[in-house]
Image (tube, rainbow over all chains, first blue to last red; front, side, top):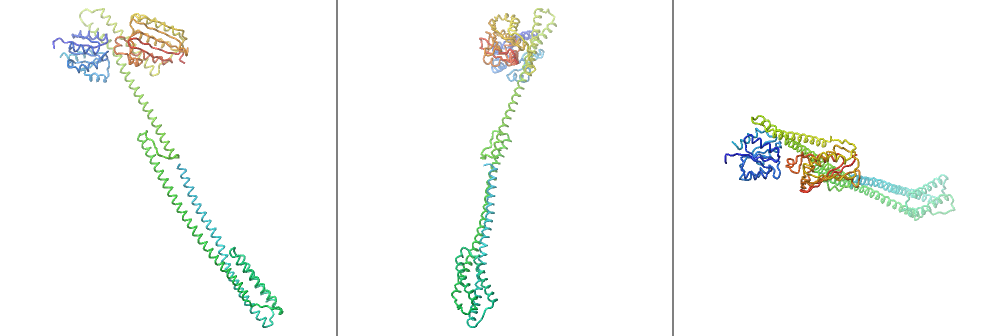
Length: 124
Length: 502
């Protein structure tokens, strides 16, 4: 992999997407975005991002299904996925981990903690 | 046959056997008594005959002696002697008469013969005595044949009586034997009958009771589909079995009700948990924007380089917008919670529905313009309402903003008309030419927190509670709401409300 590391942010809510992109950029991270699960899978294959931040409630293909498929696909299986969801209960966390997600963060996002997780999983 | 009838029947049978025994005893006593009298008479008659025979013999000896004396001497009879002789003959006569009274239909003939012959003999003897002192009258008393005749008759009668006595004794023996036999037979018959009845009763009730016991045990262990059968008894045990079966039915129904109630409670609990999880999710979405943007702006303020004021203001607007959305959401959640706990009440007042609809159109006009939608109204003659005006306004504001939200450069038609069957009721429809819904989405459209697609809230906004609130408001106001839709063609919401909910 080249030195150029970047994040794929999957988020269908325009405000949240704008906010996350700007904050990640400010932290010095390069970000590309997708609006639904299917688009995310396509971009993971095409762009090979270093890490994926995946919202779970997504149109067309939701985050759980997209994560499962990503982990079944040999070409993109290695890319770590962090689930990003407003579902705060333990059950949903288990759902996300069962779907193959490597990390889990609830909204509203604890941004410093999220940065640490991103660095641990992809930028170390 | 019922248990009581069986017991009654057994009791009656035993009583009848008992009565037969007692009856036999009395009949035996009576028959024995009868025969005893006859026997005693016969024995007495036999003794009397012997006595008469002896007297006759004595008298004859005396007469023979007197006759010899009369021939050989001039013997005269004194008055006293004559009287004594007459008395003796009279005594014989009376004894023979007594014998006649002891006589029996069977010995009647023998007695009559004796009576005739003895009467003749005694008359002759009497005549002898009376004419004894008159020598002119010749009397030959030595005629043994005549006496023998009487004697023979007497013996015949005696034999006859003895025979009858023996016969009677025999009858008495036979009667005693017969009554004994009947008593013994009736005794053993009643023992046998009692034992048999007892056996059948015990074995029959035992079987029934065992079945009842088994049934109650099965019921007790929870098998309420079990039925006590084969109790071929229309009486107490059958009734008891039926009562047990009924009880099992009722228990099963009660348990079914309890299970249903528990399931409903579980479901309600589940729904509550889901609701809370959903509330948490919905609250976090705008909060994410508020906190995220605030933190970002805070960081930007700390930066050294120049702040983009226009961008800064836009971000602040986003925070405010998200805050207001959060407030709306909280209001909606409170409304829904109030409705579902039964704390939402109607505040009825008089209003013109058409006027309130027009107000709502004015309020929503800017939004309609934003989406380039055209509003058409088809309002007929409507009755004056006495219902909750605030809820009425909220229902149609929600429906119209929904229609506008999901329609772009289309037509939204609002119509209202009295129901032909009942002019006290009005049918309102809000029709749009928007994106519509699939049948799956349509089936859940009135559920809380459900938007046709999770992306819709992002694209179109809204809390996902509006239609749930509309549905509950319509119900509260005494009416109903329904929806029809076709994906890509549009949706129609129909509200039917009474002018007065009372």
